[in-house]
Each structure stands twice: as structure tokens, then as C-alpha cells.
Image (cartoon, rainbow, N blue to C red; front, top):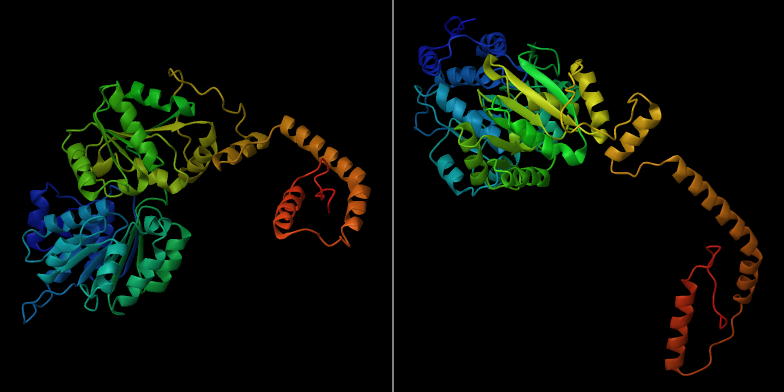
Length: 476
């Protein structure tokens, strides 16, 4: 459907044409008209399908129709909550882009930077506020922000907000909102918790799901490489020699792992940058800006930092560590194949990740093609991943526990039996020793000797005999 057929006002249509947008994506076509009518919405769409424009356009049009304040003071009338700094900045930029021909003002506030510039912007008046929950609550408590006049409320990436443990902060923020408002939920995946939360804050919402829950974009080519954990970096270096990988977003499970990957790549001459929670906001924005401008070919990121990375022509996503939450796989590969373009998602899987891969494939209902014959094949994987004993060993390993073996079990049984025998044979001695301790003779001597002897008795009581029973020395 064309944007010109969605009852969008001309200034916004003009801005869309400036960006080369003429036809609405499925999520936009199904949501813009109901939102223009003022209905609440629960929307499910994959990342890269145009969710931001789906709620930004109706909000801009609704605010433009609002009567202007007689005093000239702007009041915050639209609030968008986002889980990460990068996503908040991206949403703010979208409002600026689509509303460039409207006299509306928006800002993004987030942590990790000084609040001074943000509070200065707030003091000049704002129509649209895009915020992360933590910084928003801070400024509310400091009386810089009032949400009493909110007419539009959006919770974007709601599933990620829940995964990151922000649900308590979200509920606190909702308590500040007026009861009468238009509320929109948008999420790439739709777990049961989202439905439960929506029932408590949405008013008779329409539900739009343009794709099945947790499905993946068909235009993305998916591949899996089985590789030993200590060979992942060598496999990554080997793949990056392929000139077809014009740009690569590499996902690491941890911040330390991301830095380690960047360091290893730099040793062999590949320029890469990392973004994660330990990086300053300026460093993250610089790394992301260089990557978008193609000054940096490789960007290594954690899941949280990668939210908000919106790059239309990202050729490859490489999942160095499979995510522990299956839904996160959908978010990761959704960084490529955006705006209808193709892309490739390559995943590495070591022995410890086999259970994670099984859960991912169960969720997306796809058996990801396995690439054979590469230089670093896995050598320590169980021969039958369906074998229950093998799966148990993998599960224990993935949780950081040492898997048990038959030799471990046999040794433990032997040790247990030996302890029982020793304890039984030493029981009479322990009883006799106990009877001697019932009426000890008063200690004779001066205070210095008493202190020395008491210390000796205490130390001897802490020693274990072969039967693991405690005993005193001859003076007890």
C-alpha cells in the first residue's frame, strides 16, 4: 500500500518522499490507519520491518492537529520508551526525519552521559520525548520532567525491556501517565509476558502480527558452522578474507569477549571496533558512525548495545556466541536483511552451544544449513546430540559445571564406601574420647600458660582424623 493512500498529511508525505519511501511495509500498512483513529495497539513485527515509522507517523500527525498552547510553552505529549541508548537515538532521529516539515520538537534522553545538555533541552520545551527508563525516572525525581500531559505512549522493543529486567521501572513510569491516553506496544517477538502486561495497560487494543512469532526474515540466508571454542577466532579470520563480506556485525556474548575479538582481529590487520555497556556513549556513537559510513568494516557488539543499530546495507551478521535466549537469535539476524534487502547470518556453534542451537531451531522451526568442509571442524562434539547422557553433559557444561563421567562416579562411590567404613571403625574411639571430655579437670597455671594451652586445644580440635571425626589432644 502506498503512503499517499493512508490518510497521511502532506508535510509528512513530503518528508517520506525525501527519504525515498513511497510504499508502506506490512506493519505500517496495518497499523497507521488504526492508530490515526486513536486506537491502542499491540504490534508484533520483526526488526527491520519499519516499526518505528509505524508509530512515529501517527504520533506526529496527531500532535500536529493538537491546538497550540496559548502561552507558547511546549509540554511533553508523546513518550516513547526504549531499552537502550542506541535505540533511543535512532527513534529520535526518525521523528526528526519524518517531522522535518512540522513545527514539533523531540529529544532523546538516556544514561551514560551528563544530563546537563538534556535538561537544557527540556527547559526549552519538548513535544516528543524518547527515553530509556533509568534516566527518565532520574529526571522525573529531580522535577525536570512531568508526564501529566502525555497523550501518546509507546513501549518499543517490549520483549527486550522485559528481558533486561526493566519491568519494575516501566510500571513506575506508567503510574505517572494519565489514565486517558493512546498506548502502543511494539515488539519483534511476542512472549506470553507481553500479553499479560498489555492486558493491564492497553484499552481494547487491536493486535497486529505481520509475521509468525519469532519467525525470521526469508531474505536472510542462514548458515551454521560447527567449530571448537578455541578455534572460533581462526574461523572468523578465515571468513573475513572473503571479499563478499562487505560489512560484518559480530555478536559476542560478553563485553570482555567483544574486546578480545577486536584485539585478535587487529593483530592480523583487520580494523574493528566494539560497542558494549562499558564503552562511553561518545565512543559507542563514534564506532557506530564509522561503521555506518563504511570507515570500519567490522563491528563487534553485545546484544544490548546492538539494539538500535539500523543499517540498511549490512551484508553479514556473524554470531560468534549463540545467545542463551532463543528469541535473541531473531533480533541478531534481523540486523541484516532490512528494508527488503538480502543478507547472510553466520553462526558458530561449539560443543557447549549445541543445546542452545536446538532451542533456536525449535523456536524458528527451521533446520539451519550446516557448512561442512571448513578448515576448523568441531572435534569434541557428542556423536549423537539426541543422546540423553550427552545432552546432560552439555547442559552441565553450559551452566559452568564440570560434567561427570563413569570414572568420576566409580571414584565417588569408592570414596563414599571408604568413608563409611572408617567412620564405623572409629565410632568407639570417638565415644570414649567424648566420655573423657565430659568432666575435664580445671586448668592449672598462670594466665600466659592458660592462653597458650587453650590455643593448642582449639587448634587440635580443628584437625580431622582419618574418619573425619574431631578429637582433642592428651590434655583434654
